[in-house]
Image (spheres, rainbow, N blue to C red):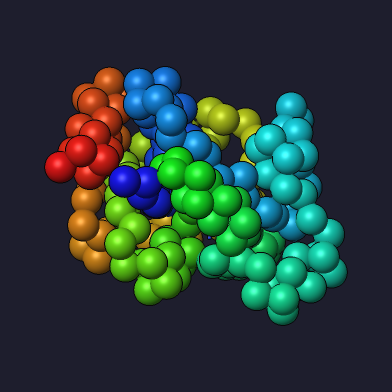
Length: 185
Ligand code: 5GP
C-alpha cells in the first residue's frame, strides 16, 4: 500500500542526503517538491528542488487551502502542496516529504497514517559544522537556524521513529529498514 513518509529534523542534520540514499535503495519512492518563498540557491531549479513562489502567490495558495501543511521558517514560508501528495497516492505511489517540525506536526494531525521519522544530530556542534560546511547560508542565517534547531530537538520524542545521523551509512541503513518494514509489514 502506498504511504506518506515524513522525514523531519533540524536544518543541517542531513535529511536531504539520507533521503537521496534512501531513494537510491528503495525504488518507487517519490519526493514531494515543496513550495517556498525563499530565493533559489545556486544550482537549484524551479519545479525540481522547490516550487519557488512569490509571497503573494504563496499566500493566495494558502488561502485556497492548497497546502497539506505550511510553516514559517527563518523568515520565509515553506509548504507541501496537496497536489504533490495526492496525485502520487492516487497512482499507488509512496511519497517522501522533507519538512521541518511544525509542518510534520500538521501532517500527523491531517494524516494520522503517515509515517514520521525524526533525524537527530549526534550533538548540536554537528549541525553548526554542517551548516557552515554547506556554505549556502550567511552567518546570521546559520545562527537563526541553530536557534530554531534547539526547539526542534526538543520535539523529537513526539515522533514514532528517531534516527540519529551519527554515521551516514549506519543512519541510511536504519532509515531504509524503517521504510521497508512500513511498506511491507
Ligand atoms: P532550506 O531553506 O534549507 O531548503 O529549508 C529550510 C527548512 O525548511 C528545512 O528544515 C526543510 O526541511 C524545511 N522544508 C522544506 N520544504 C518544506 C515544506 O514543504 N514544509 C515545511 N514545513 N518545511 C519544509
